[in-house]
Image 1 (tube, one colour):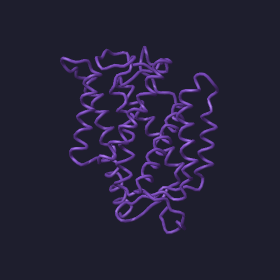
Image 2: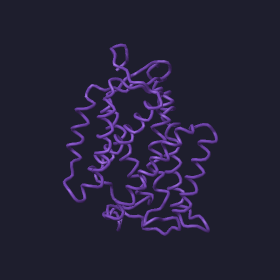
Image 3: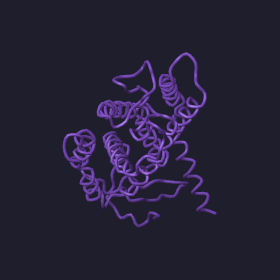
Image 4: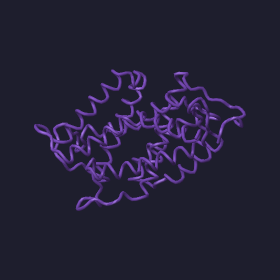
Length: 265
């Protein structure tokens, strides 16, 4: 019974942390089923995301510092979207007034929602890092992963080499979190894989409701290729490393190098 109660507590905290992504998915579904008047669908999605972001800060669910992090992710994601759409990796076929080079501005909020989840979960579960690698290792690794999303169109794709490097760098690193007064731990590399896999599931839901469209989905929707998990895995790693670095710079999440045998596995 205690394990069940802890699982429920953990699920509740995760659900609250996922509030922004849930609103985005719900909006995608509703606007797909029920056309809204006066404005194209993409523009309504932008309005909904802006209102949701305003409410999150106004209600205290997100802090102003977290808003800064989310805004950074919005810009990072929008830059990636502009490049990928230009290269034909995917498209946004519907009309919209607030589109930049074929990319609707609401798309940046899909990346921002990942940052929102990370920030919320970090604070609610009192996340701490154990054996976190040095700043001079984490920052170049994050930059290399992000740049590979661009450079692999013109040069070799080194995502698998980068994935192997992540395993080496974070082999002895753990993330610890608190549920109901009890602390648990998980290898950081495993947390990357789990978050990346669930985002891939979310991507299938998003493309089903027309958030964007891959070339193989032009005629009819089909499952997103499983290989995309690796892309989301790397994007999650970049997201996590940025959030972790900013948290440490702010002094809110000190790294600890200590005996962790007292944590539950």
